[in-house]
Amino acid sequence: KPLANITAKKSTTMVISQKNADEVNAKMARVAPELKSPYAKYPLSAQTGRSMWVNPDGGRTAKGEPCFIAGQGKDQSMKEHYVYGAGSLGYRYYHLLTRDSHKILYVRLQSTTPFACCSCFNKEATRAIDEHDDITRICYNRSVATIPDDIQAAKDAEAKARGTAKAVYNFTQNEQLVVNAIQTGVFIAHG
Image 1 (cartoon, rainbow, N blue to C red):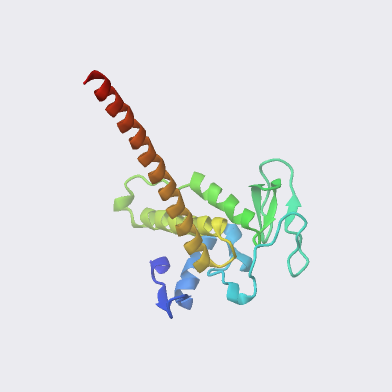
Image 2: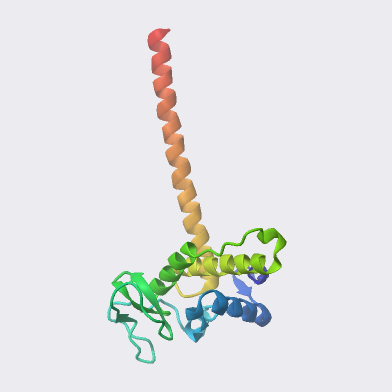
């Protein structure tokens, strides 16, 4: 898979081949048409000069485009370079330079997972499911990324997952300590 074909270079820099990037961009356009925009082109990289997400609340792109456009209701037509949905400012069109746009796409992709009966016997259905999963993962990573950079986004997503896992582990450990203390107290009282 192209997403798995990332090679390490000098321990902190990753290199993604142009062929793999082109394959991912084609998948992105098939799965979520909004991602055809050059603003969403894979891989996002801070080395291209975009070192931070644009604030949708009054922010503008370098070309002067607004980072959000008000919409009416929940269903709207598509606008080039924008994603429509519920973001930090409500239902609006959010520019792809905002993190909100990727959060909206992630939520949408999670709720529209392709379903294929007997996909293990149908190559096209399996391909569609795999592509959807790859693009959903990219949108999730971007939705939690500190900067618009796909490599950093993957690191940020992993750090978030580790933090969640540690919090759950600590909670269950505390739960076990309380249960064991109660059991010990009951044993001593009846003992």
